Amino acid sequence: MNQPADTTVLYSAVIRPHRSAGRRAVRILVTLVALVLAVIAVGFGLLAGAWPVLPFLGLELALLYGALRLNQRAGNAEEAINLTRSALTVRRTDHWGKQSSFSFPPNWLQVNLLTLPGNDNRLELRSHGRSLAIAGFLAPEEREALALTLRRALHRLTPPSDVAAAAQSAA
Image (cartoon, rainbow, N blue to C red; front, top):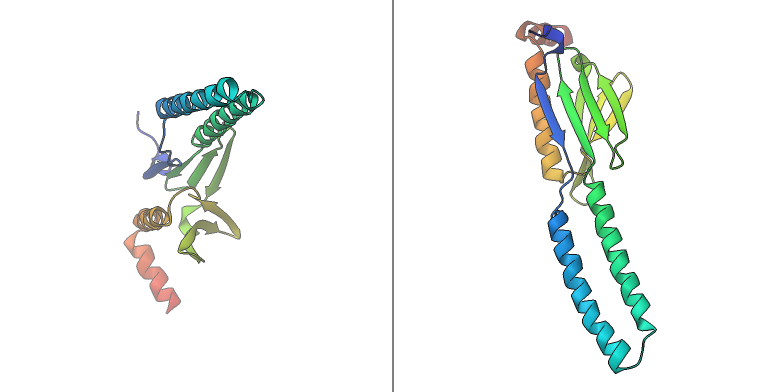
């Protein structure tokens, strides 16, 4: 079954935050820290008689595990970008699973890469007075590459006759 021409996806990308450690790596890290804390607990609790240290060691382990799990959950966020002839749609899913969607007509859409202090940048979609910052969790170089790719995809949407007419009317 063929889709109508204006709903055919011409460009699609799903962007996710980078995570250097998966669940298995987190389990291994927490286990290693637990072993080190067990040695410390034996030293302080049994040998030195400083048993009040033991609950704090357990609390440290629980906080470490909680922080690592929150970090992994933040990695569940994503942005899906789909370009059709009629719209560029950005569907965001936050780390809790809540979704929001933004749509822009591609004809007048601007893809702006704003330079920020400290070798950083911000990728922004702008059309008809509305703007949306995207790809905030990517590295600056990756945002540059995405901006270039989006500009090329939008440029392919504009027929050559429209480009020439626009250039003549601007002159």
